[in-house]
Length: 148
Image (cartoon, rainbow, N blue to C red; front, side, top):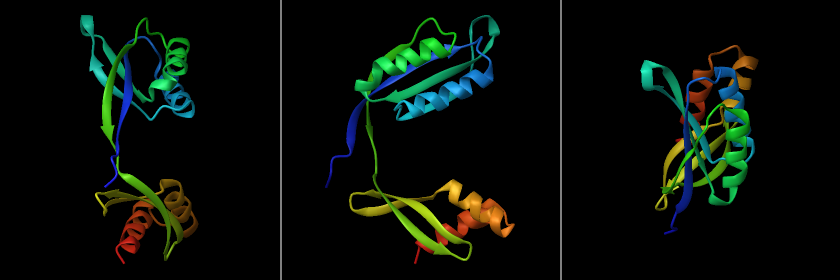
């Protein structure tokens, strides 16, 4: 059995005066620069102002470049940091054939057993457009094809 736990860093800040488009572009840039995950959460801030909690999960070695992006591309005056540990599934990628064409699927394995599958959205979208069907139809076809 492989130990799939790893140490990582959580960086987070509250944003209450950054326009949403800038938060969206910051999210993309953070992922491009190596963030393991980036997500936002709607929050209620002091004086009843609506705001956004920006949370970034990264490797410790990427701390400086992640902080640089957050400070330069948002309006925050401070970033909270803490170490955490995450456990991830072992992953592999397969290509399956469906009635809509080839779809790449990510397979997650836990303790030697395949426990989850995730068809690549871009493949499902392209196949759905090509065959004029809903993306969900292609997605479900890909899931069914992995069961065989």
